[in-house]
Length: 205
Image (tube, rainbow, N blue to C red; front, side, top):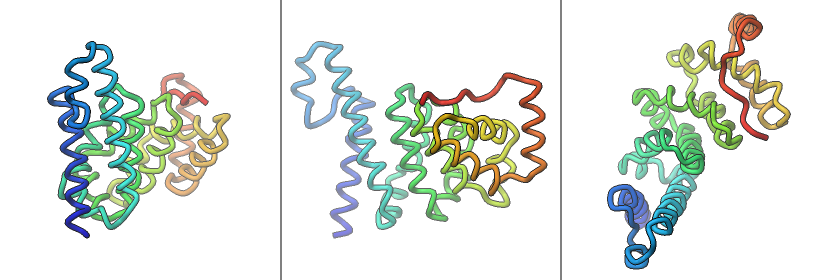
């Protein structure tokens, strides 16, 4: 059963990589070769999204953690965070959010310098991406990583998120500020916010 699980996940990873390297994906290869370029690009993009969504869904199950590490899916998710596609980034940060519940995965992400690209997701206009990014930063916060996960720009961002019209985002940001930041950090970020308009923009509602 475990071998079948690993083989299926391997097939998903291979399929995702095929869309990046060849611009086609196996089940649709013949049809795509004969399609207009615009249609072909659209189909490839949709195929990538579908495969990545499947991988992110498998990240929910702790039974898959070892397989996903073996297949370097954590690196794949981290790499995708720099993609231009909002949908791909949403699925990738969602997958990382699920995976970092595990200590080995958490340690790997931290050692791979994954905090910075996750912080960059806070500037997304996609609320789901932002929610996953905030939650992931919470899970990644340790005594060693706290300086980075609760850096001043992050705390300032959470202050503004706490004022969001979105109740979900507002509540999550408030939890971050109360449970992961010191009063001194919050006060410093609040003081900075009064003197500058520069910061991470709020996502669209």
